[in-house]
Each structure stands twice: as C-alpha cells, then as structure tokens.
Image (cartoon, rainbow over all chains, first blue to last red; front, side, top):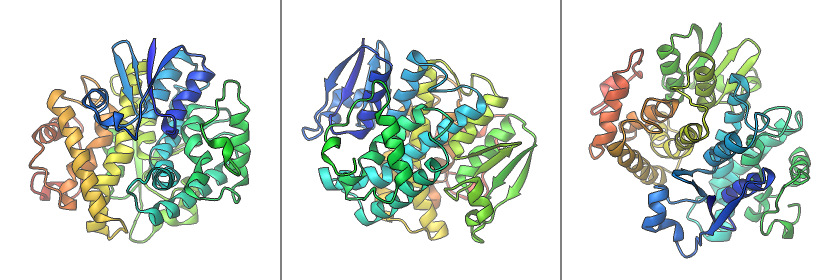
Length: 204
Length: 204
C-alpha cells in the first residue's frame, strides 16, 4: 500500500490528499510534524534530499515534489482525462504545473508561510508576486472553466490549494471572481477533501 | 513550421534551442529583445500572459514555459527515452522539471539575472539558495550519470543551462565535480549547441 508522508497544514500535501481521495486510492498516512523538524531527519532526507513534504512510497518507488506525485498517481490510477499524453494536452498541463511550482509557490504560498509559520521570506516581494499570480489565474479562468484544458486535470489540483489559502497570507481574494468560481467548481467535485483550516477563513 | 520566440541570453530559451537541435526539428527563430521589452508587448502577452520567453507556435498550438515546450517537442518529435510515459519514469522526470522551475530558477538563474541584467532580486537570498540547489544536483550526480533515470531525459536539459551558467552569477562551480562531469556529458551529446557566452567563462 502507498505510504503518504503528510503534514496537515501543507498545501502541497493537500494536492496529494485531494487526488488520493478523488481516485479512491488505498494508502497509509505517515504524519510528518514540521514544527518538530521531522522533514529534516536523516531518514526523511534519504527519501527526499530537498527535505520537504509530501513524499510517497509505493513499494520500491519513492517520489517527492507534489507535482511529480500527482503525475505518478494520475498515470497509475487515473486516466487521460486527468493527465493527457498527446503532445499539446501534456504540454498545456505542464505549463500550469510549472506555474504551481514557481508563481503560486513564490507568491501566495510563501506569504502564507511567513504569516502562519514565521518562514524567513521577503514578505513585500511575495505579496507583490502573489497579486500578479492571482490576476493571471483569474484572467485565464474568466475565459475557461479549467486551467489547462476544457476539463479538470492535475493542473487544477496543483494550483488550487495555495490560491484558495491566499487569505492566510492576508491577501484578499475579493477582486478575483473567476478564481472564486473555480474554487467552487473544484470544491463540488466528487471526492474533494477540505483543507484543514480552510473553512474558517472569510472567502475561503 | 514551428515559430520559436527566442532571446539569445536566456537560459530558458537555451533549453529549447538544445532540444530543437538534438531532435533536428525544422523551425523559424523569431528574435525577442528583452532590453527592448519585446516580451511585454500586447502581441507577446497574447501568446503568453506571463510575458516571458521562450514561446513556441506550431500551427494553432501556442506553448510557453520552457519545461512545457520540452514536453511538447519530446512527445511530438522524440521518443520515450527522452520523456517516458510509465508512472514512475514520468514522475521522476517531473520531479526534476519542478526542480528546474523553482530551485534552479530562484537560485543560480536569478543571481545571474541580477548581475548581468540588473534584475530586481534579493541577491543574498539567491546566492544562498543557489549553493543548496547546486549541492543537491551534485550529490545526485555523484551517484547517477543523469538526473531522473539511467539515461538522458528532458529533466537534464531543463536543469542544465542555469547550472552551467552559474559563474555568470559569481557562483564558483569548483566545489561541484559531479556537476561538472555531467556538464561534459551533456556537451558531448550529438546536436548539443553552445550557450552564447558560455565558452568565455572559467569552468563553463
């Protein structure tokens, strides 16, 4: 059975939680305490030299990076709806996986990490980046229901958590109506699981 | 024929240049001048809302983000050596594509952008990140010839340019012997093209 190294407040872990639930994949959760630095132990660094969560182990296969885990689970347990393999579809999904990795992480996610977890970041820079990041998502979603294609793909799952959690970083979501409508479409999907803390936030 | 929007000094564009050459894909280069702000014109923003290079157009298909372009070209013109589609292989490639997007970009690439192009970044933060980024690459490459699998994949092409150009950002590559050996393996590949300026740098 898949072992899933999971920290409750991590939006990156939430991507994995969502897809495991949506695809009904049996798995065992191994809790990782970030305050206790469980992610920097030698055992965890052997699984993932970056010392981050999530990580999954599936027999001998060990995968870190939340986008890579989405790819693994979608390819093994999902279908080409979630992760197409034609050149155009695959590339359009990758475009938004890259957006999750850089723009969404270095904007709203790090602003949240500063405010909730006291992470050492340049807050002004993260907040400015977050506005651009959310505006580009909102512009795309004002023309399309889903980010990469005309249906849900792992690109949506990769970009969702830290966009939806932006108000944890004191970033108002009020200007982004198309983004908010997309949150609602995702939250209505069969198997969707709520992010811990998300329900307590205005606009979340 | 594929149109390739290319800025000469961009390491992200160099990834695309390398794969176009290695796979001998016919294409037309459309030069983009970053000093002239060609990448922020309405015409370019219509192709890519992020206002970055590279971008490719292949008939009606428009792809931005260098990793997404590598995926597109490898899937359309390459084979499963460069981009596997089994769950584990695909996920391991994604792991290092994500590394190129975040760690390699926000470390050595942005330090270089500060020093060569006066880009507004926090240099001390980029330099510290670059050391970690290059150390993790070096540790991986001290155990394996290639990043993701036992052969060249697009993961290597995605991580190569800004690692090889690190000395543009005044980051010494001397401590990283496995990284330097990997540069030589890549530079010996059929179809490899030199990065403009790379030959002038010590250790490049």
